[in-house]
Image (tube, rainbow, N blue to C red):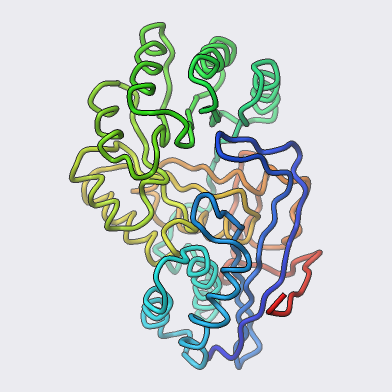
Length: 367
């Protein structure tokens, strides 16, 4: 089964409620869909959101990188040559992690279809059922409390609290939410690079001293502040998780060697696809470092691939943060992974198991 063409489409799903972090506010899930055609008529699906302030990628840059640079290297290759194809994708261009991730998702979808098996089984097996947390966007306290209680009423047992806009208000937000829901839900804290290292130690020691228990604190400082992460890790008891500081396997090795992080957050769009995510999961397991599997604000194509990876690498990936599809008003993808609030169930169809995609808007490059 050989690759014959690559084309693009767009999916847009309105959010149930605006997604707010210390870095941005978003109203819709908007994915670029990458469709790989083969000489057997079988299609592979991948996708990527536009995340210029995180990965540096926009939908325009993703299309250009695939159409003009990476794509020509893999057209004509046989899907069975998975490692060779991934090598071409990873080395055709530097950076452009979302473009590489979208392509690799479609390639792995086709590879598993070639052998008529669900992707997670091709990656090593595992249980096809996961449970995710849900994001509580940063807002005024009353709104965050209402969102937290609504999530718990819907069956979510783990809440990921977004903060990072103002240190004193953030402390008050976390304390108030903890007082209200701590006995009913596990709390994770995501600062999205919104604090300095000293602010983080100040805030966390204050919260810890008044009895606030958190499962983890995620990326409190800027992505390049590895010394800051280590400074924090040495001074608080709450586990520190690296997100934007952990793009590549090499960065993860540096984080582990320096003792800067207790947990690594793997995201396909950051690390440039499944092949690199697998390397990170294996590296972390080798050093007894737990991993979270996360996603950007994206729909169920890319998140399905992350779910398949999590099922196959459960010994390393013990924390699940794949709530992207659950934040949308509906899911246009039919078949494959079922995202039902906190419950994620992998289908038994080949590859990602996608049967059809509703509301798909075909695109012609350049656009």
